[in-house]
Length: 277
Image (cartoon, rainbow, N blue to C red; front, side):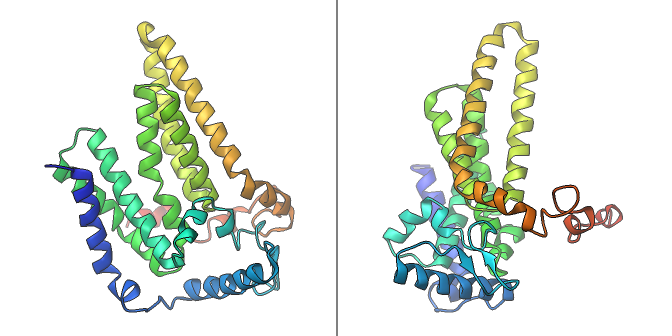
């Protein structure tokens, strides 16, 4: 197949256009509360930003008022790729759908790296892109979750590449992707991503230490991996440093233990018995 990545990308773009045709071409929007409320707040804060030329630091409409950056209620302008999107005056929903396509392309490249055929890689990437979780996060107003999850295949792909052939190119791209994923503002999804690449890196480290011929290369790979992670965290500090200042005043960080208590943190989780059903 000639230019498989281009053909796969076009096919996934068509699928997205069909799935979201009323939104893309019909001028409609999703009416869930978690879609409408942030949109209303975002419109007001963006208008204020245009009027004053300053980043609005407080929004008075949610929970009787919350800081905009510290509470993660208005982070778009602190997400560096947003500036590229705004050069083309792209609306928020289209930006989310581009992240959905980004997720599919990343899945395709990852599966091709693992020697899957073009057809298998395309099928797997499409399955990841339109998995119910990804689609419903767009529909029900949790776009930050979907956009953060869109980075997972890319981050894992560059992690695998880095361990297989340690170099500054892959280190730099991994650092940028980790930083942008964290900037997208959904720490829980990013946490799962770090668990994935951390487990893979630990496996590579253990296997390398067991092979005396690979110890030097493994040490170099581990060092570059840690460097990429540190740079990624550094890129994300633009949103997490303010959040750390706000933590003592947040319901998610104000418990006696310094974070959300167990009942709050697990309020939307499956009970272990429910997992079996």
